[in-house]
Length: 55
Image (cartoon, one colour):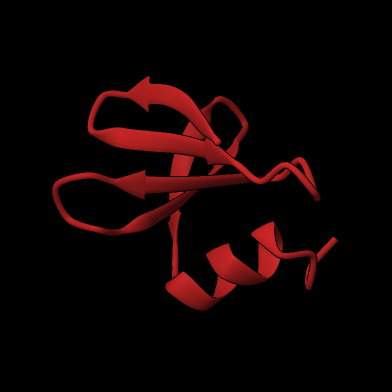
């Protein structure tokens, strides 16, 4: 579900896992929010996290 935006980063949340997927709308890069900042991660890490592979 769409949660909003943080600059160019579009924020989504998966209903089943309640985990977030953050994608830069301009570059298509993926981000993880940690320690009050967005840190770039690769696509595999982002999808594994959202779909429950990493806890």
